[in-house]
Length: 238
Image (tube, rainbow, N blue to C red; front, side, top):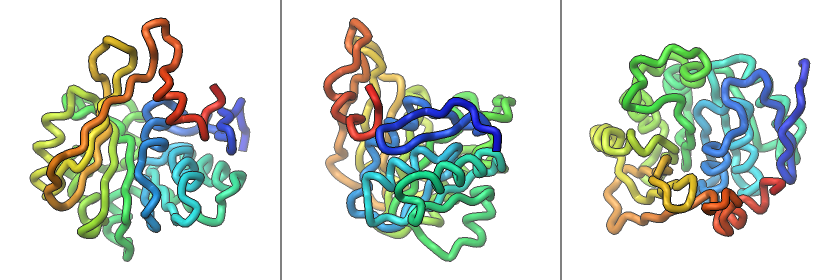
């Protein structure tokens, strides 16, 4: 495998030049904020180069993590990155669509995590192969939620990051599959700016009250906030 310059985390290295999903802030936030402590069996849908799965493995030394992606080059790099990290024995990556995985899997998962490749408000018009590759023939978010639900038990969580503009539509769709918010974290890119992303934790039962929090990434002078630095201190070289 020809490898370009890697991205260095504190405890592992990621090669992502061939992957459809490069290392990015959304993925790092998802990996750092995912509630992994009490989960033994975790699935990442659309893993790209696999760094979110590795972050979860670093945070939970007892979890077994399965990663899937439709793009064969992404899976090749994910497997390479997995083999060369300290938690290789608990990580596995497969070149398979979510539809086929849900059809043939005998497992349910305590936690399912995904950085979906589209925004709900415009996913039907997306043409870029890089944006659709992660989920193969998942044609819409309804299908994604339906298939994810079949891989969950009554106590599982589905954790996703999405555009703030997609929030209302996705919540409505999730209810169609009996998936309800238990927690949400609003991501604000810079102090005094609007919410740009939302991380949602969905479960198969109603939770009240819903836990809601905010995370601001940068101060007004563009330096990282103390909250962001604290959140990522075990992962990023900042």
